[in-house]
Structures are given as structure tokens and as C-alpha cells.
Length: 310
Ligand code: T46
Image 1 (cartoon, helix red, strand yellow):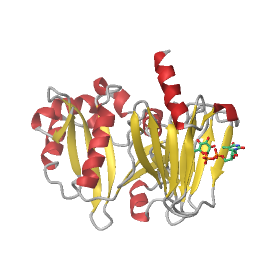
Image 2 (cartoon, helix red, strand yellow):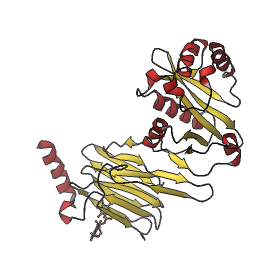
Image 3 (tube, rainbow, N blue to C red):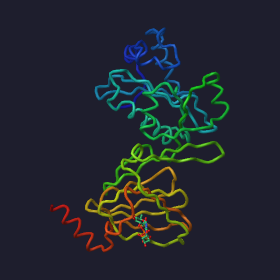
Image 4 (spheres, protein in one colour):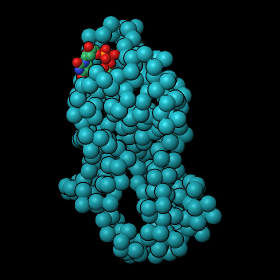
């Protein structure tokens, strides 16, 4: 897969999705009326990147699969509106996610933007599912000049991604996962983050606990769990998490309320308070059970060895 400039040879494939009702039924544009000449003009105009950037998402054979765009680029506010449309034959094959991830990366790394936002009709269930699955932040408030472009349209769901956001869940060396916690930002009024057991975390949550009032430089933890699964996050402050198991060792800083770490395998953990009064919150898969703890490092290593041997 690859992102490149739009080329004349892409026009028939572009027209294909424009005339495909299953692709365009929830889109606002009147694509049905477009002709091959319209596609060629659009491709030609796309080479001027002052206000809009349109790129082709291509297969390994360089066949056009869809267009991904950054529109209405606002250099002063370092923001742009994201848009994407793909051919039906490319759906469910990773092209949309690839195009999106790649253009957002370019937005921040190459085009010097700080904020990429977009909206979708709430009735466009396929698109809403896609963005929610990838844990994009829903935004409650948008600047007036952006909303003006959508005057009269009421059922919109807005999303945004800021430079520095983790784009998707990623696996750590130790097999645990960094996860995005759904977060809704309100302009000048903070953020609200939430997750639901079973839906957003793949275990039932039986216990929530949090650790607070810890002085800077203190370490806690020094144990592993045999069965317990946990989602750890830091809604305030900065805490370093040191994780170790048979797969390796990894350190990760928790400082963003919309980022958590799921530890769902036997893993030695230490938590270092990098900032006084930082709060560590944990959603756990089971009630407190002293028998599930391994607090001796040697015993932890023997436990892992026995487990791999059995
Ligand atoms: C973990 C890390 C991230 C309870 O009575 N109920 C509870 O639900 C918990 C979590 C603890 N306790 C008792 C056990 C100890 O007497 O609270 C005391 C302090 O617990 P601990 O020394 O285990 O705290 P940490 O910060 O070293 O570890 C805690 C969790 O225990 C552990 O499961 O993964 O946070």
C-alpha cells in the first residue's frame, strides 16, 4: 500500500466509486452526476496544495483504491479537515486505515499541522463504527468558522486528532497493550474520558482502585499477578511504569488521561512517581485476592519458567 499524488490514470477508478450508490449514499456531495472530465479536472487541481491536499491510496500494484485528503488547511491555526473515500473493492482490506494513518502522520510531520478534525453523519454507521473502533476522540465544540461550513446539517459526529496523540492501540515488547481511552474534548473546558467493561476493555471489571498522595520519586509495585488482568491509567500527573516478563522489559510513561496500559499476562511491575500527587487508577478483572500476588522476584521467575514448561 502506498500514498501518492493523484494521476490521470486514476480517473476511471475514481468515477467507479462516484457512481457506486453503496459508497456514496451517506456522502453529502452529488457524486452521481460526475463525469470522467470532472475526475480529470479534480486530479489536475489536486497538484496545487495550497488549501487542500488530496492523495491517492494505492495498492502494491499502484492501482488507485481511494482518495484521502486534508482540506481547508488553516496555516495560522495549524489545522485541517480530514476526508477519505475508497472504492467498494478496497473496503475491509486495510486501505482506509492505512490512508488515514499515513495522511495524519504527514499532517503532523510534513505539513506542520497540530490538529486534524473531521465529521461524519451519525447515520453513516459504517464510518462511525470505523472511527470509534480506532478510538478517535469525539469533539463536542468546534470553532465557528469550521461549523459555518456545515450550517443546516444537524446529525454530525465530530472527531479530532492532535499532534502527539497515539493513533491506535499498540503492543508493547512485553505483550501488554497501550490503549486509547475514549476521550471527548470540549474547547476551553477540558476533556472527559471513559471506557466500558467488555466493550472497550476485553474483560469484565470487578474492581476499581486508585493510588494517590504519593510523593515524587517513590516506587511502588514490586510484584506480579498470576491471573488478574488490569487496565492502568494516570488521570493526573506522570508515572513511569516498568514492566517485565518472559518477553522482555519495557518502561512506559503514563501522563495522558486518554492513554492506558492493559496488563493481561503475568508481568512484574514497578511504578515510579515522576511527579508528586500523580494519580494511578486501575480497573481490575477480579476482586482483591492476596493469593494472586507474587511478591518475590525469584519466585516470579520460577513461576514463569514453570508456566513455559507446562
Ligand atoms: C497492582 C499495582 C498497579 C487491598 O486491600 N485491596 C485492593 O484492592 C488493593 C489493590 C490493595 N489492597 C491492600 C493490599 C496492601 O495492604 O492495599 C495495600 C497496598 O497494596 P500494594 O502494596 O499491593 O500496592 P501497590 O501500589 O504496590 O500495587 C497496587 C496493586 O496492589 C497491584 O494489584 O498491580 O497497584
